[in-house]
View 1 (cartoon, chains in turn green, cyan):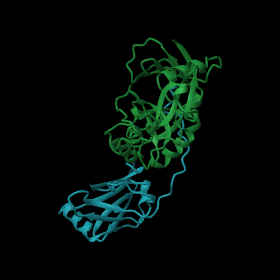
View 2 (tube, one colour):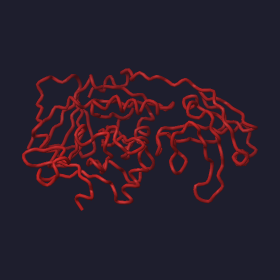
View 3 (cartoon, chains in turn cyan, brown):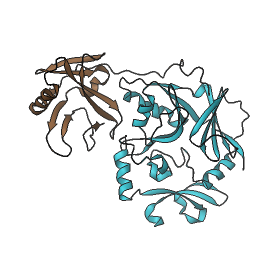
View 4 (cartoon, one colour):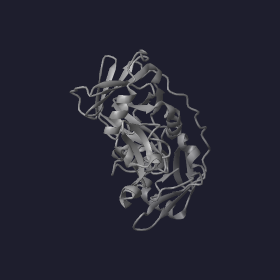
Length: 238
Length: 126
């Protein structure tokens, strides 16, 4: 299966400055690498470990680029701005200068967790089958928006989506972002809550994939041709 | 990605918080420990700053430094030189610097009336 999926709902926030990597690392759940050319996903959480925004992070020489769901972009900016506190950090919204396209199933020479730029196209290898393209300029308007194929891929790979599974009501363990919670990176906002949940083995909720009939209807978050993602109580699956 | 203009693109506007004239206190125990730490070296100060991060969103940054840091308020609290960055002054006005003498979790501790919450280790507040 190979297709592209235009993502005009994803914006580009550039965190510029010599303190940018440490700044993002100190406020999000995953360990942010310092080497330019690396890419990771992370989540910004509040004190209760509820998600403010999940983001793809591209590490550059002069800062980090965050690919963020546009509806939560301003919330994230409002969360980050007051915490700059004299550090060499500036936030630059580059959403109007770039557009984002997902490409599924393309052959690649990039390693997972890396990115490269060729001319005006930055390619991020986020998953073995998923590339994210950040392309300079506004969207041409005729890009494929393969919602059906993307939904099927998401379910197959238990890949949560902002605004669907990833919401401010959920912590990362509840919506399939457990891989974004680094076990021993140190303190960040929400870390105490997440660490306590994990050490006690009580995350409360979990994102699962299966057949639509496997889950109570009210737990379903995404469905496609009989398959589903659902956020269910851990007690319901034990 | 439009990287050519990344470095020159304007940053999102920020409503900068005006610096606050900081008042702080140091307990007798903390002052004694700081005096020991300073020793006989002239010109040393305690830099009390705040960085983003930590379990509660902000974390204290205590350093003993020589000389004067730029854009800082210089205070003298009963013989102890203290410098507070203007950028974090609004978060530090009214603090008390204490020293807790115990084997686990001991050390300098900041009691901050501006903190809505403090993490377990006391290094972070929100």
